[in-house]
Image 1 (cartoon, rainbow, N blue to C red):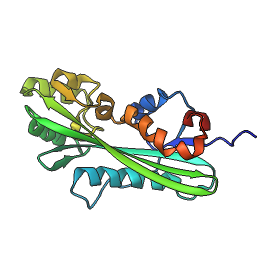
Image 2 (tube, rainbow, N blue to C red; image 1 turned 135 degrees about the vertical axis):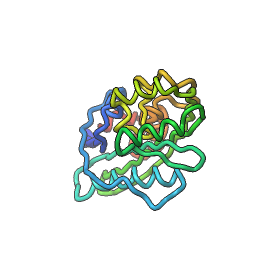
Image 3 (cartoon, one colour; image 1 turned 90 degrees about the vertical axis):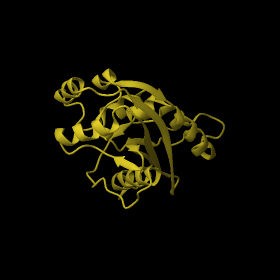
Length: 206
């Protein structure tokens, strides 16, 4: 008898995460809930994991269908300071001036919640990449801020856009800096779904 399919839910409104998850070639839908992206954790790994888990729990709450909810949170960290999304263009400028000419870490936490065969399972992981900026001149900063690209991005920049005018090096997973470490996600799913795939591929569960 054919297994009942699992509904894959991406708990993120980010178009960048939508594009990256789309590379898996499996059907999924996007459902989001607005939650305060705040945490009592000061460690960047714990901070991003906590936010990702809260995003997923908000979407999963009350569901009883067979579903796989995936949520994520990306933050930038330099010398222990966590940079989330700037409140406005002025704060974006402050963030970028602080990151200018330095190497910072980008952490993306990914959280799973699976409800399948009357059981709930959860899992999470955090991937780190390092990004180095050239010294950002006042002219380049002004031009970048005028694009508005900084306003909905952790650390006030998006790696795949006009910020490439001052990004000099990326160490680690590029997709992680975009907002979703896709190759690590596949490896984590290989292990997470092994009890359910029965020798087949977990891709076939969706």
